[in-house]
Length: 361
Image (tube, rainbow, N blue to C red):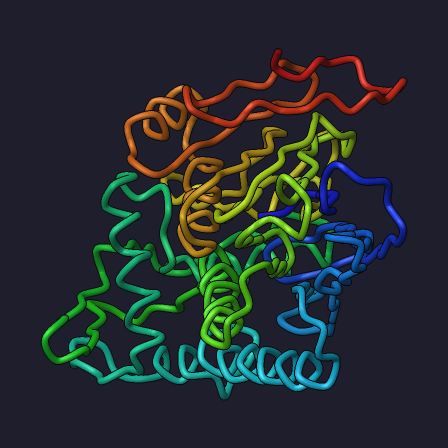
């Protein structure tokens, strides 16, 4: 999932801007997170508002950004360190780029035998399997061999023949009571379409547990927000077209957002654009240009559903999104008008001379 977003506190001129170019395994994004500071006057006494604390570090092949409001700088620094420590620990569980990660080690174990796994890994795989079932396999974490082949193809800028055995989410069996997992056949699991969202949720949990009420966590294209910043209506997020122009902006709070697209992760062979998104029904990369942005109660759900809806045909995806409780989505094809689920929030227009499309009225 990837796209470029502009994120800032709304209803106030910007006083600072942070531009970060994020390269990552499943998506590459360009994110701006900025805000302003102000003071409030009450009964002739000037009382400072909570101050914005911002931290960023490179992790997970991208930039992890954390913003929250606190007047205790020392406490904020220690809290940010705790958050980044959590990111590192979860990367050791989910990364298919690391041979020593839990998921990589799991895939080296024999098939047709139940294996005990950590609660974090079990919860993510269980959610992935649920979405796979709901989408009839459009979302599938068992395509690790195919995604590995795509990475090799991208390096050579040539679609390589893939002779790996066919696999599907149905080859993966979970046993909830024992928190174990079994493969029907040898599999390579790729959690790139769900793990970053889960990690963002876990980071936000750390912030919430110590009483932080106004926060944003952004990991590549995955974003989760709590309450609006002081004296603001919410956090403003720019929604991007496949052309990398901005379609419009959302002002949101207490929700999560994710975008899946091919604006950054692709290679071209001849006149064909091969995205990093693999269609499980064919085992081949998607070649149509389309951004899908989802809104959900958690970053994990937004992350996985954005991928699933991007893989599905647009008509089926729009119908599915409208029928799925707690999921809203917009579908933005290249050079064509965007389509929205019935309750997707209204976009605020962003006036750009180069843009030929108009956001929804």
